Image (cartoon, rainbow, N blue to C red; front, side, top):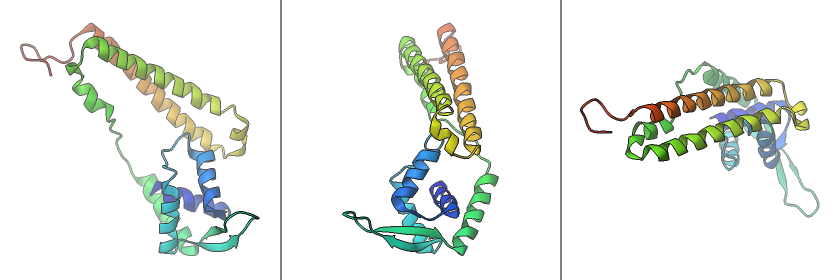
Length: 186
């Protein structure tokens, strides 16, 4: 659904052909959303089938295949607002898949777990730096200011995760987290 909102939202700005949509989503959103770029064409076809998007024109450049230019329809505008409101009003708790692994991590040697946590800390730190560097890139000035606010959301979460990893690493090196007094290790 978020792919569809992305497509409809961009088509509200102007008409695009499929490849342009893919490039715009990649250019504007790839640093803070997990859109699978192969899913864009599939979502576009579904939107056309539902009548939310329609062909605006066919375009041919010399030596290239014909491209379809798409535009949003009135029903697409309505669908966009329904999907958008639904998404904005949906409250969801984030569950990290890593936690199930961490719960059973007592099955690996403490040194190995320490190394894993250390690598995760480094990864989070590097990713925060990478995202913060994006704000200094020239193309960053060509996209809406809301992008910086969204990027900061990602940065805040990554920093919080990095701090938690440091906390967990200290705890596993200080005590046996995987035993209950008098019982076998998990």
